[in-house]
Length: 180
Image (cartoon, rainbow, N blue to C red; front, side, top):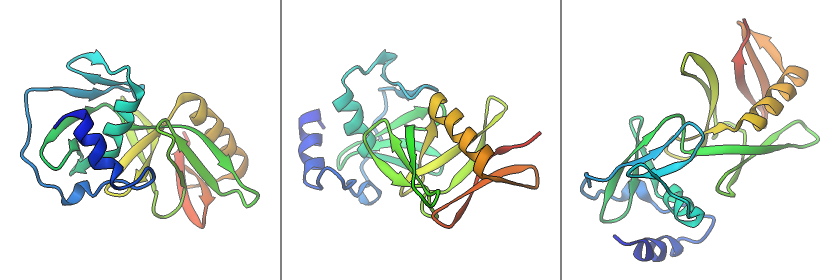
């Protein structure tokens, strides 16, 4: 499938709605390599994808099948090697009730609530908060500056239970990190 055909397919669903990739069951397409490095940069056959519109387009058709990511179209399913997570949470807002809304590198925002849970995942021996950004377990990680700001917020507003630092957001208990 070409980029233009994929763009037309996605536009049918609107800018704020993700295509139903979970209902598409195309054949696996091998021979090309797509990677997302630990900084959230996307690569095609070891070349950085510099066109942000293409990367955003690919981000909309991601699927997580049992921990393995794929770009899925109605006609192709391409494996994606992801170092940490495909989405980067670049910033967040806190409302007057101390509820958090995250903002990603693809101009997608979401509430930190029970539908967008946080798990502590060990990355190179360090437990990092990994957030479910959208349905079907599509994950995101906090960029360094957002992570430090998030930890500062959690240190001031959170509480410790069983050596884990927690905060509450939209009536959801959210683990932030392990306290040593």
